[in-house]
Length: 237
Image 1 (cartoon, rainbow, N blue to C red):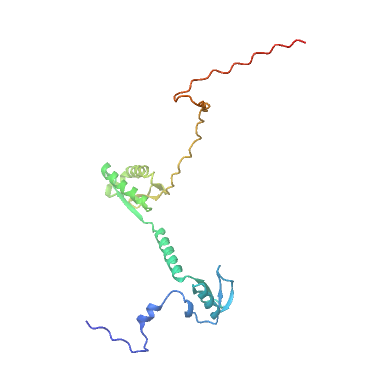
Image 2: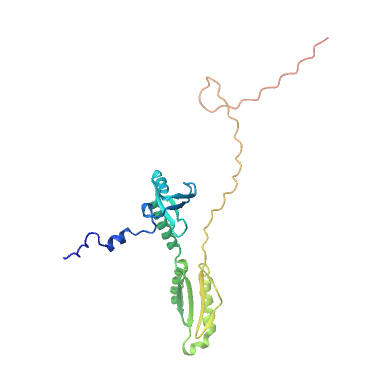
């Protein structure tokens, strides 16, 4: 296998240039006499490029140009690799959250039987759970256009079936030879646990009886209440 010829020394190599390209200019790639530093780890102000590079080096971080069009360019002293990692992570999360909603179509006829109706209703429920809209319509062909009421009843029955998963955006309407309706997914709210009710008060425990020293183990006998002292006789004068 023949390899492409190596460009002569000192010649422009497009592959090398592509590898060196990055989104921001950093450190010695910033070739201006002065920069404006911003951020929590510096005193905001205008510094010479040499001073800004020294400050970044002292913190073992990178001098990153974030606004090259400003005069002077605005820079931050940050960990550039960590900055890129967090940025890509945030973009990935935003892309995952911005899922494009589609409109799924379900087709009926005035003579759709119960088995076919149930099969298509399950598909519609699945579409709504995934965050998609559902467009259901009854197609009238030939003389079947005479049975509009049958088509309307079918759409309303379908709406009742999907009430748990979707919201009917409008009442059934005719478009040409089709009667249709559109459902939007219902926002699912998280179920919150019911707060626990107040506990029933417990009955007070009887006071613990102390065992006298030298008594054998076993249940203590209830002691009779102490007799009240006899009244003293009055002394004669």
